[in-house]
Image (cartoon, rainbow, N blue to C red):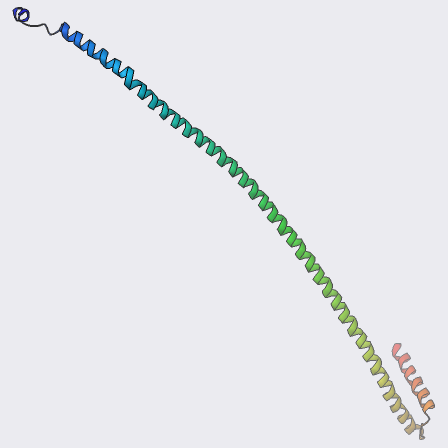
Length: 175
């Protein structure tokens, strides 16, 4: 009745019973949130932070390990390149040594062939000179026999005549 007697309620002033019920409900809600919900949210938040930080730490560790492996691979690659360059240089030096050996053997063989050729030429020349001396001597004796009119049959005289004639030819050719 009180409300009816008064007539109408002032909209600016709240009803005190509603304020009490609202305050109790709010306090109950805050209590439930602080007691049950907030600790679970805090543990989930902490687990999430730990997962993120752990992931970052693992990522940093993996990055550091990858950088270390990269440096090792680069060092190994540099060693391999150095070794390959050394092997190439050794191969070039070996090839040059083999080339020099082959050239030396070729020169020796060439010199041997030339010396053998010269010896053969000297031997052939000696044989040809001997044959020519004999023929020239025979022709000279025959010619001398025809000129003189008598036979030069004596072998010792004939050999002496031929040798003198050929010596005279050699001394005339040497001048």
